[in-house]
Image (cartoon, rainbow, N blue to C red; front, side, top):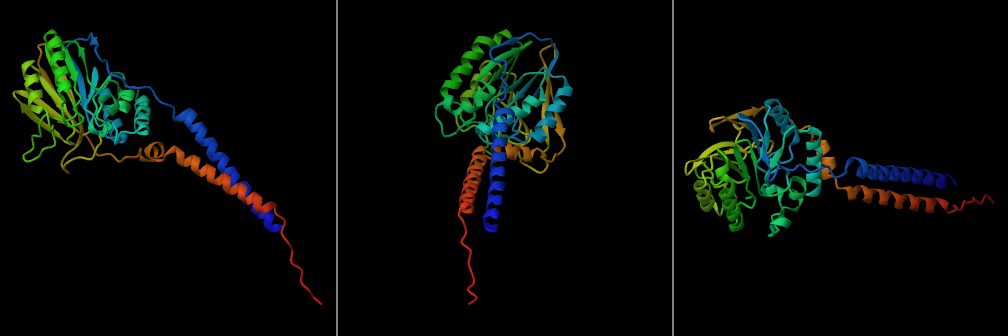
Length: 332
């Protein structure tokens, strides 16, 4: 009898834990883990602004929100008009990765547009069709290639996340610049992978299409290129076009001497521009527990554990319900 009571108590305990876990999972899914709003750029928009103005450039946070949030907080103090992101926003392309990132960006309440391009970590590299390859990225951050204008400057976002520029993307860039470049004093193109790696003996750059890309940008008088991919700050010059590589928004840095950073570009009334690099001190990633729970702890594990506990409690109830046979000692 005592054994049956013990089994029933254990079964009740397991059942309680299972129901609490299941209820928590349901509430989390319905209230906390809802799909947050996307962060879309002003694609195909001509924004009326005044000159001078400033914009920020960041890249390669790769899900490290501790550093990225600090950078965004400092950018807010810079009073910029927009933020360019050169890609690799998440550690790898997954629905929970993007959901978590959008949730964190929603908490930031950015006062200006965040205009991103996809990086190689933001896409499904196994997919050949761009619409499939960028499905999750597109749902979160919009078009993979686009243009917009602010005041006297044209901005063009180019997708080279596969470390190649396809003929279709080159034709699109040529058509876009041919149509809009002459309407604006300045033109900036930004992408994830730089046309070339300026470091001697290093090749962390475009594998295909770089020569044609440079030719198109030269023909249409592009004033500067912004890229990421290399987790450092580097300056280059291709056919007279300055290239600024910024990959320091949270991903592991290339060299011990590198610093987390972002860029601030100031556009002057005479059509000139200047660039400043802002360093950010090393920060510990205290966001990791939340990241691990939201991203790395799959929701189906909670369901599996709940089902296992329910099964175990039912089994123990069954065992506890069987009467136990008492043994009598023969004293004669």
